[in-house]
Length: 583
Image 1 (cartoon, rainbow, N blue to C red):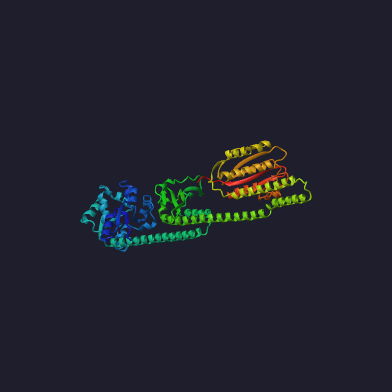
Image 2: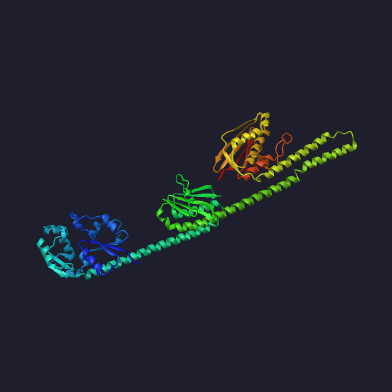
């Protein structure tokens, strides 16, 4: 591979260096003269650093300088590495061996080349120049010239004689030609080309090693994605990958379900994450990646099913976006598969959990049917046997009381069966979930319980209840059962019931507080079991199904229900429900 090189040399020697490079047939090598530092002192020239820096843009600069010139040139040329400078003691060392100069220059203390002579006579030195001015220009005293004839000028003697006359001194001509200069330049440029090639190969090798490391890291991350079953864990791993590739200030994953935003996960959040402009994708559904300024949006999908978007903002090195584009797109496919698998696993896990709960319910039903429902039947049978026995001995016996007991047992059994039917219907409703205004729902419940509330002179307090997204029928069952429970287990005081709500993370926490008789702490769990009643069962009627229905509704929604209470001081039933939206 050839590299374009621009050679910078003091412009006193530019013409000779240019001719020597042409003679050696170097390709992609140009020469630029740097104004002589001594001329800069005399304000006859100016070094245009902007022009020089533009000149070697996209080229490799090679500066051939003396130590004195290099020190001063650094102030004008930017970003020059030391490896781009070839240092020489004197410029004339390029033209003639120092041993030869030493042999022939006895008594001649200043060497001048044909190109330098042409430079002086071309106007750098005033036509009225004298010895003092030239000493100031050269930087030291001299008594004679040693003229190095490089065959650049046709009339050598006339030109050197002209300069000698101006400064009133003698000279000697040494015909050196261009051969030594050509050899030196060929050696310098060839070495420089070799160093450039070596440097670029090292850079390329480092880049390949970095790419290999990134590729291996990507493989490790991809392999690790297959080990996670939860979508949140997959998203955390995706964040790790995109953080490694792009070093963003903010990183978001917009989770999509059924083509609607389900949730926005954020990572490395600085102040506020702007909602991504998803309109960028709506014009072209096939577009996988979009760049805008210093932000990147990657579509995550699987089998043409949109699962979400990765939104990387404030990328630290936006110029590297294209470099990792292919990798990011490949990783996005793996991310899509991993998220799809995680969601499938979650659905399977939910089905298993539902099946487990259903089996537990079936076992509980079997226990209820075999024990609790037998009791009313046993009572009916006993009472019928008593009637038969009394009728056999005493035909005048009135069986009304026993028949009423039998009737009550039948009613009790009927209530139990109805309660079981209501319990079994929880979670099986085909009614779509919708946004519920709880303020209106509670008012509707209170209207249903109007006569009961009035008869007990109860006070129901509630305010600022939120809207929730749920099954409306089940929501009415839940709150109505809790309010009825508070009214049933009232104390001597008029019932005061307060309904509250509070947001905690991704849940709403509701409370139904009363000033009733309270509950013993040993019964806190028992009261939520089906047909498990506490307290005086003769004083308080019921089937023991209401709170178990509440528990089932809450747990089916992914929440929890519990009670806090002290005997004689009332109770507070708390339950949580996840914050869902229509999306």
